[in-house]
Length: 333
Ligand code: TXA
Ligand code: MG
Figure 1: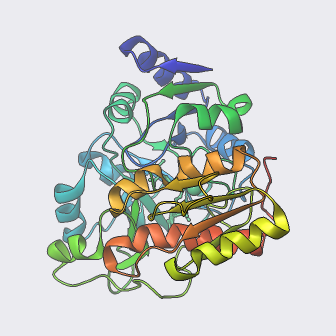
Figure 2: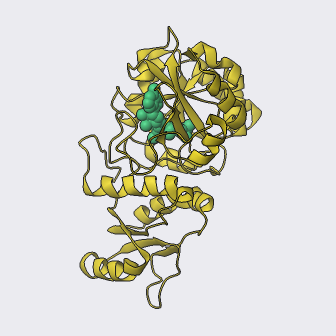
Figure 3: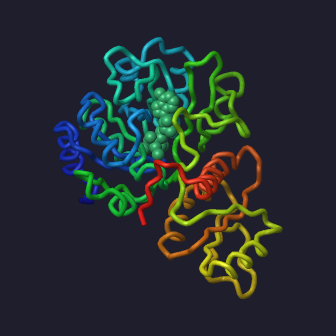
């Protein structure tokens, strides 16, 4: 059930969490599927609702940095500095897990992912609840993250006790993940907080930037995949690729930064030429392309420069996922 994010509904949603239920809630990045992180049974329900393998760790969401010590131990000074600079906001820190944190939350690992989200509804819910909320993105495992309450309802609505509507997510792609448990800070997932932003606090760029091998433990290549196969094409091959796929497959959706050539406007969506605006729209446009019954989605390859790293990362995963479906991938259609 979708409810608006009035104070009463936030109080009710916090009560659902206390009772071991599942609450989908907006964050600035994407919608999360939340459960009481200190209740093993509640956390187990997340995995069932998503169809997610249970060794895949969750991020614990906190109302404030001060709550960190309940969840992490041996917190390095740099973690506090990063928290001060970027929280509340779209940065997840991987730290050593504190004693007593359930294996269900960390996928059995000795580390834990934590963040203080920057969305007012998420913060109000976390404050009303008073504890840590374990929350992955509120989609079926391997599918696109939801950036609106309706996406959550359509995909996993039946498995959730309450969906708090907070409008469309402004960031639109998942948080940057930085691992602080290795010898050097390591970027596990690029996001709108860039390596350069982190370097300003760390004093050096994190390792594991663009071009490195798979970074997040347990991450499947099929992550972030839409239902229809997705193909990336450079600007100069875009028109030819679309023409060829239309000839063989019929309906083809296109997301491009350039406008449609004459006679090719059907199914062609012009995307923003600026990475943060592009990220905000990306998942909703891919969902639309899927819903329109397209047999293929062709996306103009964004520039291979640092400011586009996070968007390129999601698109490349989506393209890989659609040509090599993993055994865990669950098709919603
Ligand atoms: O923006 C976000 O981060 C959203 C919102 C809801 O906060 N959440 C999100 O969660 O994207 P999820 O579960 O879809 O992706 C979290 C990623 C997973 O790929 C997981 O492997 C990684 O974080 N992760 C969590 N804990 C980890 C740990 N201890 N070590 C390494 N990776 C971890
Ligand atoms: Mg996810």
